[in-house]
Length: 79
Image (cartoon, rainbow, N blue to C red; front, top):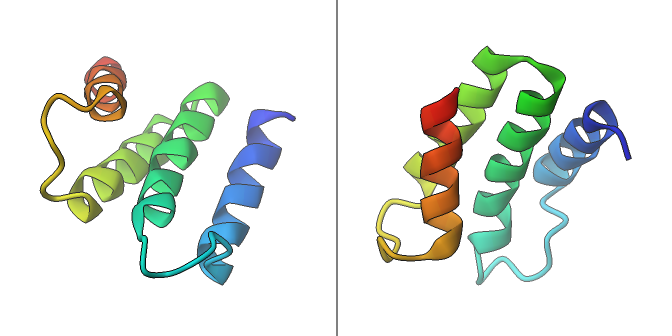
């Protein structure tokens, strides 16, 4: 799957909230991270930064040592 298609499908899922039960918001939050990664691959750094910022904003109080958060911060720092 190409990055453009990945971004398109992630945006569609986010609009439709097609992530299962809404009692667990993590998949919706992580979708912003995936969207940021897709935009990075496409070379659209402005959209990538925005998606990462949305991820960090929505996931306000994660455990600082979570691998996904460490990776996301490292990826964002490279943008």
